[in-house]
Image 1 (cartoon, chains in turn red, purple):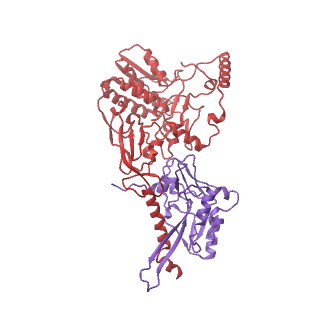
Image 2: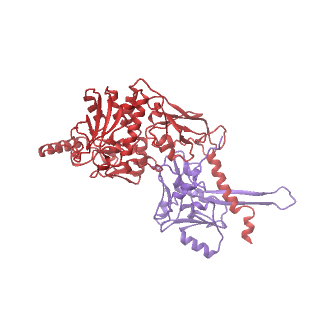
Image 3: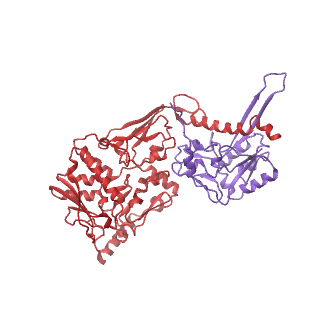
Length: 395
Length: 204
């Protein structure tokens, strides 16, 4: 059980921290992602404008949101994936490793609050550590008041089986078994009772620590406007811990077979950019994991894609007005384990003689935007004031 | 190769909530009097302190006809169309913005770009049927006519309206302006794409 380190941990029922800058809704107003809102068993997540809000009283820290968010915008303080992998590593290799949930089999090797909390990497980890098989002991989810995320659990297990096949393991080694439903949950999620002395001890330490590391409101970013917060947020790019975990796990296997899967309901995408690309940099600026990077010099513009970083969050596709970026219909799952980059697009670059801004194209002169804008305006002027309309007005 | 460009899909425009509030500030531009002096352009530049090449309002000047035969009287004319942001009821720029930087204020119907949020992708310029938003390369953001919101909030008129030498430009609530236009029986013209429902009124 992770130690309680701060007074707010004791007071707050929730261990979930939302990283706004990884949330698709925060980064792109055109995103319609609502995976966490739809799957939260307690309905604790809601959207306030473009920012996710978490009702910490309703939240029971089950961690389904952490597993379902493609970008990993939710962090479970204390009970993160590394804590669970450490628990897996403690167990001596056996014929099978049993996962179960708070309402499931108590004799399992590892209890998670809800089986939808499992990530692909956690399911595969026992196999990588020498266990013969992974058994998911699942009680009847319809009886459980967590509920609501069974679809995600199935998707995770399906993908884990695919990954197992990819690294040359028999996908039959991942098994889903039914187990009787135990109506009283194990006390895994809730923190152990704290004595009054311990509680005040924690409070004292907390106050001292916060006094020592006090930050001014400016530093903490409390005085920023919404726009400045947004700007700072989109500049922050990071890969989620769960993606890093999965990739390092897959790379630890030497075998990597190519497995073709559809991009629907995907986990990563193989992107393609058509020649209509405007070089607007929206995909690069809004991508939460820097999967798309622009490389520019005086005369050329290139878009470089790292498929292993892509989470199929769809920000680039949803935001892109010229509709030049699209996921390919099928993709090779082994891209996830690789570290290569793909050149999506390259073009020569010119400077517009009117607006002095770079544009993509081979011909010098005006950029297409300047041309289009001028054409639009002239069309209006000619339509309403041009020849013929003047006479009609004087009649 | 397909021509590079972007247009706003109609269905996306339909998604935009019709933001008609109780009040809608707008301009009435009476083209009968415009002489194309560009005083509005200069007043706007001075008021908003915009760099070279960034003009929130522009006067489009079109020459037409020909004068080839010196024996005949010349068949030529020049006409002017001052254009700025139309502060549409359903702004195409708002629908195009990937980061939600553009808002239409409920209290006075002015369409504003939040420069802190803007990432300078120029989708709004592609989407706008009037080509109103312009890119400020120094600040790396899009800018456009704000109907001088810093002046109008203090009860002053926009800079272009106070400067106009021929009283072409009038500022006020759109309902009041429409009433005045009807009184004067001038011909109102609907500029361009009625899908975005522009608020700025033109008469000639």
